[in-house]
Image (cartoon, rainbow, N blue to C red; front, side, top):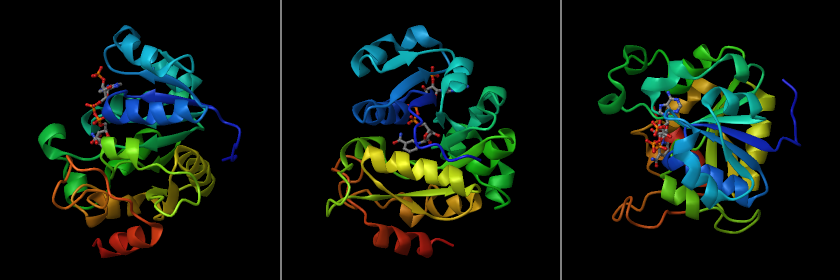
Length: 229
Ligand SMILES: NC(=O)c1ccc[n+]([C@@H]2O[C@H](COP(=O)([O-])OP(=O)(O)OC[C@H]3O[C@@H](n4cnc5c(N)ncnc54)[C@H](OP(=O)(O)O)[C@@H]3O)[C@@H](O)[C@H]2O)c1
């Protein structure tokens, strides 16, 4: 797929804790955002007002259609409802974690045959799915971003099967205040799935979610990714 440096509109399928946090970071760094959720754009009025003139809300299919880069940030159980047609040929960032209590048991993941990202990629066959942002708590994502070169800048893992798509996502992550660390093919996203050491990396071991996030360097992240089975 072509690598497009000049993409500016980020379309969100899902505008909850993670979607709204990423939308805030995107707006603050000069991107336009189109937000969507399951209940319809009228329920996103307050969020759009908070985000300002670079933000608007739309139906899911419209957010997908208007996206230069799409972000799918919904519960895994809803992944098959993501519209494939308007996302054809596009980079799709997938933040989804598999949570059996919420999503139900999915044998193919439990058995190690696929990952949450693998399911989404199989559904969006003609899109370029890149796993990202799934292993950082949304409040820490909001606060750990730093300018390029800052000594306490954190790295975020990405995984995907298309190199150009990963280059595009890495550039976006850099703009949002993080270094991107390429963990490999989409299947390698299991190394930073829920329950892995890399999924706890940004959490203070004592304060956990209540405490401020901990910066994680690329070298530390590489060690943690290597520690996963
Ligand atoms: N919370 C975190 O810190 C965190 C961090 C990393 C990754 N994650 C993962 O990222 C995903 C999103 O998490 P979240 O915490 O942001 O969840 P959330 O706050 O519950 O938000 C979920 C969003 O998905 C929307 N949605 C649900 N079904 C949909 C559908 N069929 N079509 C379009 N939109 C739909 C919801 O819309 P409605 O409200 O209208 O239903 C809502 O906007 C999850 O897979 C989660 O495991 C979460």
